[in-house]
Image 1: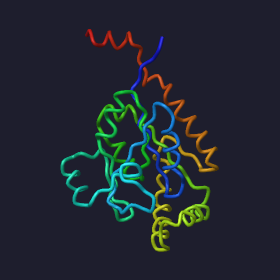
Image 2: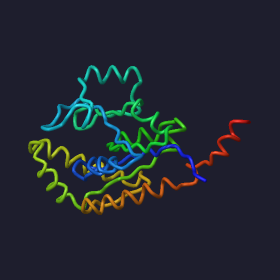
Image 3: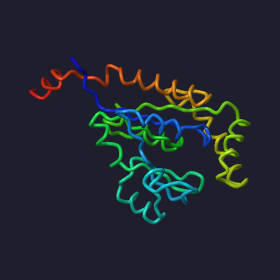
Length: 210
């Protein structure tokens, strides 16, 4: 006997530098998981690859896709647009694939407000807290991807983002990479076993006969 289920839509938020993207990408290496690549209008950082790290779009193209309602969610963050295409999520959920997304708090809130029943049933959200703002500053400085002005903007935004942690189903304080991966895996394992997500093949057939 085996259960069938639709996929999880796991939304991970937290300030820049808390490790949410690294965590999602590491989990996506396991079978049955997919990391959803976001679109953005910001310029690629050194070493970033279009279609792998982000779908890099000109602002005009991004806004055209907004007008055509192609985004599941989108927001303007750090003076640039970010968004998730519907085409990268819905079909995978229906096929039982667990989709991982790292989103800012605006994007996460838009996903929560989505009235699509598939999205509502699939949603699991997690907020990652930095151990301290001092440690967050150290992590951001170590990346060496922003000048001092951009770094201070990210720290100011972090203070505001942290205020939203109670809006999430789960919250964890970031530790070592291995500790974070273990905590994340335990959440996903539990959510995969939630009875409301599961059906037996016989139940699916009986519903189809009604």
